[in-house]
Image (cartoon, rainbow, N blue to C red; front, side, top):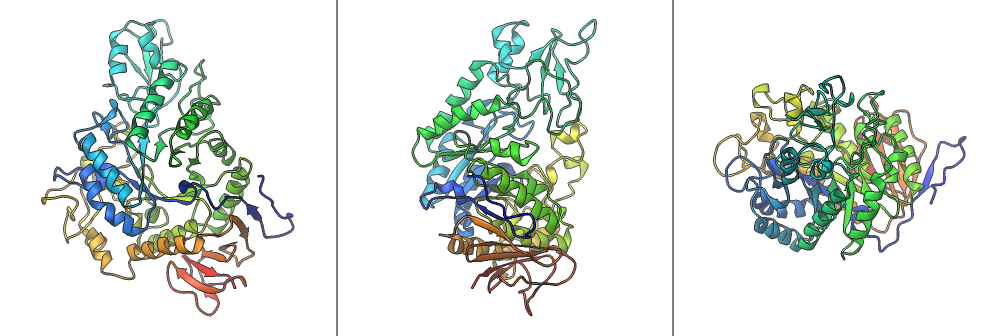
Length: 533
């Protein structure tokens, strides 16, 4: 239904997204992202793996999450740490075996935790069997048509077919010995698939079924907005961010209508969530129409400044857009591709306070929420020394890269590798020594820690939001603050620089991200939940 907004003269906006009491599990789930290389190492080689995940699943169940999303663990040369897939139906030996995956999946289900796996449909590794066949074939051979090959421009074809740029820096085209060029929107070892070729769509339906038959509960779709490229390869005229001719083409929605039908054939409310940097809330919402995907990440929330006005604007735009497709939002503050929110919000004590407040605000909203590993510990971005960086974006000149948010999780002890795995060697990315106070073990012993806060928040979310209506009402509140109400739950966040008066709707305090509100005021960089009388 289209959300109802009160007249513009009022400061209060109301949306009503209707969800039945028998809603599928994913509509309100808290999902925990596992970046497999950096979560837990089971064999001491310095890289996270399936046995490591399985051993730490009780920790995640105790944290209070409903599901985990695991980044790619498939056979891969690891040029882009698994997002360059060579075989979509097997586990890379670096991470274990298919038997290890099955064991992890069974343990997760025994603990009541759903498992979402990454699927990478935009490109493959250059070691994939299909691409090896394409390189061995002559131009015009049907096997080459599975990828985006084109002749170059200029008298000798020595210029790329168009001016598109790689997301990792440099041209988006690589020339092969016979003179043709292939498209790679990311690294040159990640050739883009040609989704105009029906073989590609058939192959990915088969891949989905392979993992659904093994029992996975859903998929996170990498570069979900990028599958189809305009057939004429329209040159770029507006830079590399959407809207752009290589992103968000209308044909991608036919892919997800097909996938919707596949998911519907399996019991257990199987689902898929899109990583779609679609450029606007309206474009984002198109991915969750009733016959397409179940979720799409709301990156507007992630990209918003620490500002009550910015947060309010995201809420208004998001609910207006998703209401038109009768969907629900999927909130996210961080992931393995962006600077950690504690650092984005200012770093140090200020950044941590704001990150906790943003998390509490997000968890009060209807819809699903995704937590990136380490958020529950308040980890900051790490300044990885250039000599230790491994992100292909760094090597292609695309800035410092993403290694700083991918440093392994600190579990225990007082020195690296902080219990990440057996042995005392540094893991694949070095861990800072000052994380000794940020480990799970250290925070377990501190009732005021960020980990303790996350456990209270997720437990209370499950208790307080159960049975709540989906109506969200923006309340009139003091400058620099945002306040909203869902039935009996009121959330207030102060993004300003001084204490502010609480709105009259605030009643009994349930939880605060910082100092408890007192004297009718809430401190700066703090959010709180209240029970409306």
